[in-house]
Length: 192
Ligand code: AMP
Image (cartoon, rainbow, N blue to C red; front, side, top):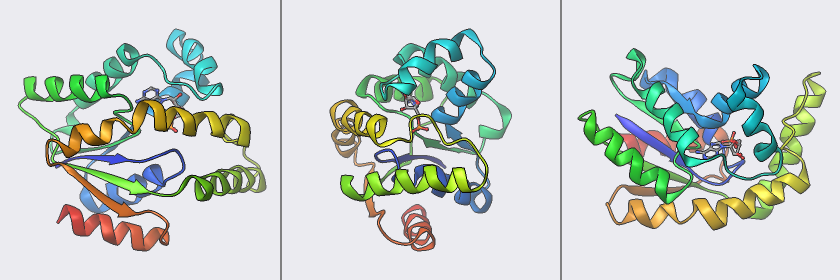
């Protein structure tokens, strides 16, 4: 099964994908994680992406699509995958469809995790504080200022992807304000 977990930053896409990959037996493909790995490794792509990520903007469609194409071709995606943080623009969604069709694959379901903006802001401050408490360095884009930009980017550039999938009858929405375990149950119900 090929699943898209969709939603604003901080909605819990990564958390849910991390939980579900075990029970569903399919990998989590997070473009944010891939980019953070490139930034840490200081690859040319990472150096280019770092500035954009720190400003809460979007990395170019071409770069992201190339990354995802390469990843989907890997053996562990043969029985399905869960996309987390991709597609983030209508152009990415359109290319994804074409790319999958060329491989004889398709998206089976898009699950929108809904959380109001005010709750998201609180979550990101909490995520940064939790990282600090564990002695880790918080994500540089998990501060209120950059987060405001990330939300703005979501509503301007990413939310327009929702009608795209609605038009294809692939979109389902769930309440992401519930406890983590309850959200997982709701997602599993949709997938079943
Ligand atoms: P995330 O971990 O999904 O919140 O992503 C962190 C940052 O990586 C985003 O704020 C963007 O700058 C960049 N990014 C991740 N996924 C994409 C994507 N599909 N398209 C463009 N930029 C992305």
